[in-house]
Image 1 (spheres, rainbow, N blue to C red):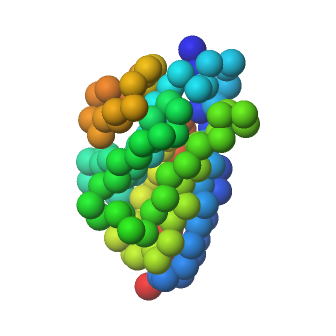
Image 2: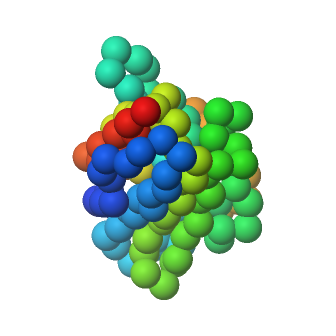
Length: 126
């Protein structure tokens, strides 16, 4: 069982930056691939970024590629997403998620992820 708690959301102006953190419980964090997803009002949840269990590989949605960076610190049981050049379209509730994985390949399909946090709101004003 893995419990995930996101933090770092807030209100930021367009062009600004935010870093979200996701702290995980348990001693096997390094066995889990981690992902970030987001859901805007009236829209379906969408994939943002993912990182392999070791951190050796990452994958991004086209909409955030070049602006967002996902990273992890397995010693701190934490995954991060650093968001630069934020746009109003990035406004959403951001969720971190986890699935058990021993490979360097990561998945963008939300159905692959077994554990989810409660989410943190990110609002980008124009």
